[in-house]
Image 1 (cartoon, rainbow, N blue to C red):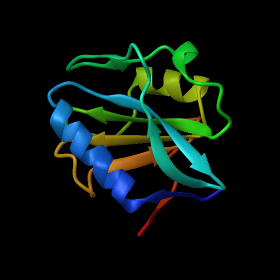
Image 2: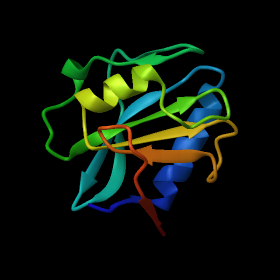
Image 3: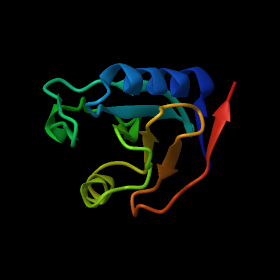
Image 4: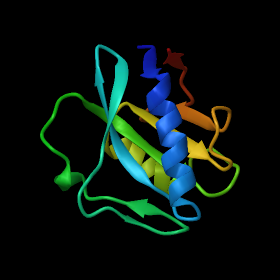
Amino acid sequence: MIWKIKKELLEGVCELAKETYPNEFVSALRAKEGLIYELVLIPGTQSSDRSAVFRIGMLPPDREIVGTVHSHPLPDPRPSGEDFFLFEKYGGVHIIVAYPYDMGSWRSYDSAGEEVKLEVMD
């Protein structure tokens, strides 16, 4: 499947990452027919400059939730060991946005941690 995301949503993710810096942020992604259109903020999420953690059990029972997005405070959007664990546990598409949190500093991955194409839609 080729995933797509609304451009204004991805821009919003970059802004959230900037506002949260130096801490990480994490959110779930909601999609319909392969188009990611909304963030799902999860109650009880905790973040620091080393990680952002949420309880999967706090996610709503929603079949449109397809993965996660989170930030890295360093200029490296590659997944960490903890990221691979999250990817395996939840969802089929994951976005990491790294410092400086612009439209060129993010990557998307599948549940195995392999980079996947994410088409940005106007």
